[in-house]
Image 1 (cartoon, rainbow over the protein chains, first blue to last red):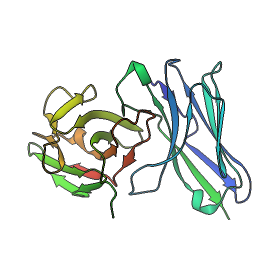
Image 2: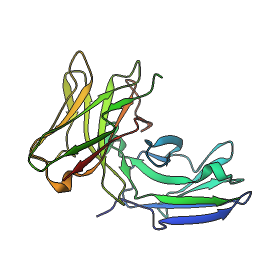
Image 3: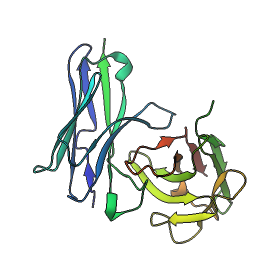
Image 4: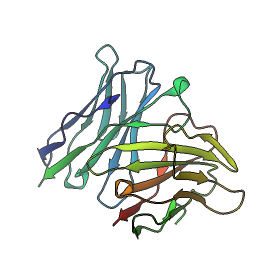
Length: 115
Length: 115
């Protein structure tokens, strides 16, 4: 049973517009939520994270929103750029319920930003 | 380049052979993690190691898989008697001591193909 779900395998957006990537989770004990970005044939790179005690974290063009009651988080990219085209993975850290570094990943959403 | 180094990048093995994947963490990092990504799937945690210690191996298959992180040298993920289902990308990640936010630094991965 998937604890972290990304229900959209792909998303296509026009350059300059907003990209919104969604993620749902089932375990209310998760401590941190993270977004990783992955280009083909490369490893994932950390993008942004949010603590479970916050509802928003912003870093430049990237903002993550957390809705604990809905067990939902989203990543907003504004404005989207062609270089943002990649697979985006949502991940959750079990915190006290698991060991450090034991992240639970979603299956990813492939974002394509069209020029 | 002081990033996480994995080798080999690509490895082809026949069924029944052994596969050894190596990982050198980022400079200054003492924690190493191994993840596996099957085709069309997210990354799945396998094992978390510190020097000479396995901290969490809850994601490791019970048979044929082992990992070590010796006092000197890289961490090694060993798969004995490989089967076709072991074909996957294996990612190593590292973190400095004391980080529990889930932010990991990943290598570029080792892609294992079992014929």
